[in-house]
Amino acid sequence: MDACGGLLPIVKVIVSIMKVVTIAIPIALIVFGTIDLGKAVIASEEKEVKAAQKRLIQRFIYAALVFFVPTLVYFAMNMVASGAEDTDTTNWRACWNAANNR
Image (cartoon, rainbow, N blue to C red; front, side, top):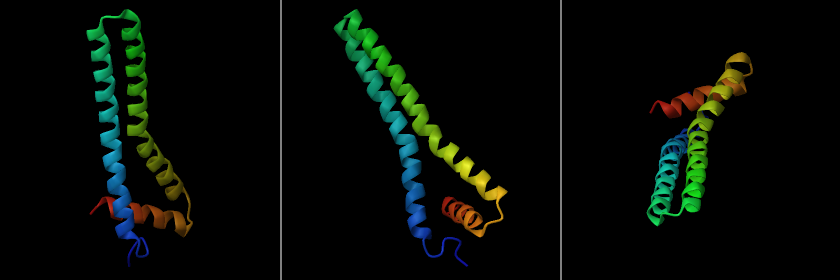
């Protein structure tokens, strides 16, 4: 029997999108931050360099959050599913695992 009740293709698309977003957005944030810092260094204005450094640090933090939040949510949901005997939560975990193990 299908763990997702016929929704496995949709859940697979969601999992794929989450994987791409989890990797692409942090990389883009870091690249754009580096480009901003490079422009500020080339401009040779100390005020701009400090502002660009601050933005780069913020972007690193945002990139880490974007990278780790889906993982943390998955672990939290997995803990809820493993601690409950309710069939809805165990079905959710089975469906998610089925979509990840294509």
